[in-house]
Length: 74
Image (tube, rainbow, N blue to C red; front, side, top):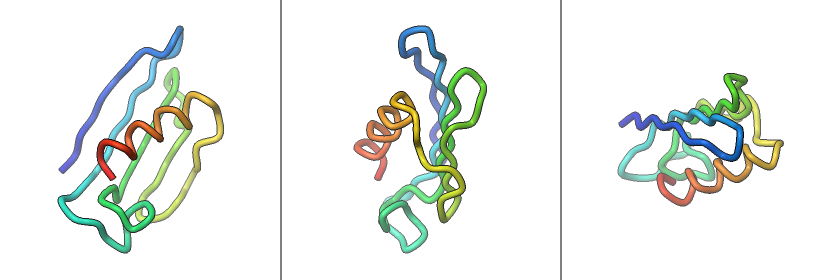
């Protein structure tokens, strides 16, 4: 299942998309339920996971959103 969202963190617009399943998988983040993840801040992609890391979270905002999504969907 795909879930998409948008939020404001201060002056920053964050958009995200998560592909998640009911059960964990070897393809998921930490063998969890998220198999694909994309986070963009102000239109710039900052986090990408597609059955493996393409771009890990580095900025404070990206890490904060990543943590929230992991808690909810993984």
